Length: 124
Image (cartoon, rainbow, N blue to C red; front, side, top):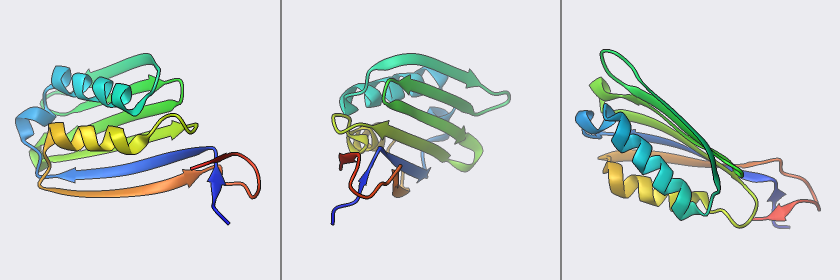
């Protein structure tokens, strides 16, 4: 039986990203907005914050859930969550776009099916 669920959640860890990029609030905002768009999400809100002396956190709320990032430039590390609901939004497209733009040297990505129900919900 194919697992069914309400959403898909990608947990992404990127290592070896350019520290200057991880400290650039505007560039990261642009990357996440475009990632939401290429995934097929409908953007409903955006909130980003630049920390001092370094680091950025941000979230792009989409009608189908969210894409978020938190960065540690001093470690070349970014933690990204891509959570989408419904069958018309593809979190893997957002992931691929983020990879292309952030160019990590190493990446770990895990997919979690959310709201898995036997015999109900959307097939993924």
